[in-house]
Amino acid sequence: MATEFNAFEMAQRQFDSVADKLQLDEGIRELLRWPQREFHFTVPVRMDDGTVKVFKGYRVQHNDARGPAKGGIRFHPQETVDTVRALATWMTWKCAVVDIPLGGGKGGVICDPHDLSPREQEALCRGWVRQVANNVGPVQDVPAPDVMTNPQHMVWMLDEYEKLVGGHYPGFITGKPVEVGGSLGRTEATGFGVIYTVREAMQRFGVPIEGVRASLQGFGNVSQYAAKLFIELGGTVVAVSCWDNGDHCAYTFRKSDGIDMDFLVSITDRFGTIDKEKAADAGFNVLEADAWLEQEAEILIPAALENQITADNVGRINPSVKAIAEGANGPTTPEADAVLKERGIFVIPDFLANAGGVTCSYFEQVQCNANFFWPKDEVLERLDQKMTTAFHAVADLAEETGEFMRDAAYMIAIQRVATACHLRGWA
Image (cartoon, helix red, strand yellow):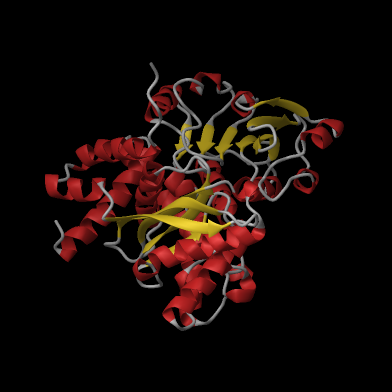
């Protein structure tokens, strides 16, 4: 009988493997395996029909030895506390691997925003903040958007926080609209960051990007901007997949001669769902969910949710695939990782590849706290520099030690956090 996937158990397994390589002592292992703090709470919301519905919410702070916790808030019907724990843990390593002075946190609410009116979503956002206001803030824990949350949600949360604490604290939360303290370049940051690492990998191996094909899973913010920059650099996107809330399943959309991103975005809703009838009329092949794995492409970019490349489907990856850049958090299970190693597929791990989002969120936080904002070109230039430096540090260590890229990234990140804990006298 198959066991249910547990993201936090996977995060701990990944940590344990590298802790052995680093020969960490028992005290620091135990400290870093578990979150420092967890908040579980309920959020009552009066619905539009007059009834009261109670939602379950979380905030998990994994480790703040290197600075305030940092991490998004996810609204998802399948949210679990173990998913939030895993995401908070990965945020710790993500901040460390790109060397920004923040720790890892994550939040969530079990809900489906598709089923909530704007007023109900606002009430949920404000209720979430009221439950954790004493334990978050610019110098404690800085939230941000995640799956199915957006800049408007962040503004509602900021407004509620400022009402509660009495003052203006735009550095409390990131991912805001630029009109209320958001950073230029934040919308593009995660997707662009993925492609900055892809670009550096290809340059490192002497492969020109022109004509290289990519297949992407997901068509939300990360995937859309990753595809946009990849095409601008000369690559070709041959397939994307997306979740269809109406059918409650996923589809892959293929055009072997390359996708017109402007057109595809024009038939996509705000949740990243592509209109399959319009796509079919425009000549797209509409395929099953996992078909994105099977496409003839050199690069795969999973940019949806965790647990997407598994022991059950890793064998479906097309032989043409040479690299995987993980735009999502935790998309590849350890069992699938072992197969990728055997096949010699170069993996740019999630907490390196998708660190552009938290890096730009850090830039937003810095700008808000200084009350001085940078032009977009400067933001993206700083982002490119951070991502490029981090990529080569990991790639250099992988080359020197013969380690898989994921393990090399973990080695750098865990050592940085462990050192901060030791210096503070925590372990």
